[in-house]
Image (cartoon, rainbow over all chains, first blue to last red; front, side, top):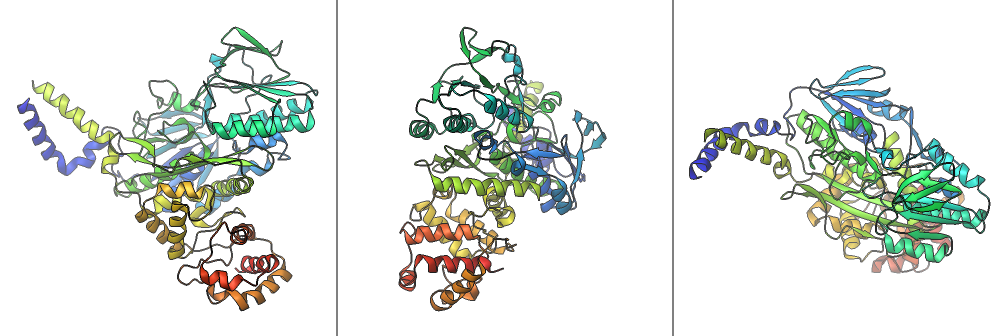
Length: 422
Length: 193
């Protein structure tokens, strides 16, 4: 034992001069290597910001952003469209042309079909791209296999904004007064913890105004409201008494698209005129095929300082797909994670040391047309535990429903989408 | 025996590597400040009308505001909570970062007649502290020129309702101003590029 320790110390001493290089072998950030090419996969809340900030911090690094669509529609605020507070999704839609021009980012609209971590290449529908470092920000994929019979065309999830959101809105509009909407919430963790409850508010608001006698049954797989509980309960009591029927610990496992019913735990049958099933979630598909997903087979383990995958060298995972400790799977989190990741990629490519991450999350949820509530947090890495934790005192929710927060929320979405698109 | 030693060493090195955070430097001013941009805009130029720009803001004012948010002295929604996430040193670092950024200005729509009226009121009551049409600062006064109208109006609501405390000097100066006068001054400041 003593021998071993002495030898070990000797070895450490001998290796001290090359410590940085030595460390790189085990999934921390490797030093330089001279490469100047970064590829970013995914043009959402995380990917756009990673691409922009790398170029902002070091314009000599070549950055290619690969995204399958020519635009991106924000999930945050899409519940307002369902509630009728937005006429369409145009204010939530960004394009990439200004971002590309302002920061010299090469934007490629293509489907990523494969990532070769050993060969440092990304294969797409428009050719193969080499990288020195890769940032993967693919958002979420649904675990639809856990809901027997699931068909998103009949019971939309509307948890990726776009056609799905429009489909759900159409179904709500077509519903007769006195109808029943069923909303199914999956087990946490899922994208946007307060999102399903905000959606409950927005649908209830729409029903109250336009579909008298209707109600919304909320089947929550979780044992309780996941986020901002007291505030949501207050909102339901104040505005939607008799409209919102919230039922905790009700996990939907099966659906019948013909009968328009869902089955809770395969037993309890609940019928709806409009059924919004938000399935349980996992990291975006490309993260799975690239070997970035951990033993839970759902999410991607990362180094909390650099967001480099602990499974694949030189690949960083940010946003909803990553396991980012206490940071919730939110748009603001993805924005913050992208910046910490970008700063450390730039540092390493320039032979500088890495810097601790400092992140922020602020999530607003609308309760009614004029009131919103928020949850906030400032995040940093706990160095002993090597996980991202909230800074004490910074995490908290609004003391009450707030008209001013609804005003601030409108500026938040404007700022964050502007940041992503220009 | 030898193999055992090696594997132990390898494990130890890996453990060091994965806890890369232990080797990382404290968050830089840039790292801290970048996280604010989700609400306050890239490099502190806000695109949202109720959110103030921080670019080019007075360092003294920024520090003072953050400390008042932190202590609860200044009325806030999210800032009272977020400010608690930063040490005094980190607040100074962020103040320094934003003070150095160049304000980009915003295209906030103002009423030219009100802005002209506001200019006259400004000349009488405000210009001793809010220097150069609100573009410059002195002591703990903020840069107010070129801020969004909506943001300025929210601050007026807070000042006139007593939610945001005014200095003795400010209280004295604004004593004779009506709500409409305040509004006119806001239009004037917002009109400044």
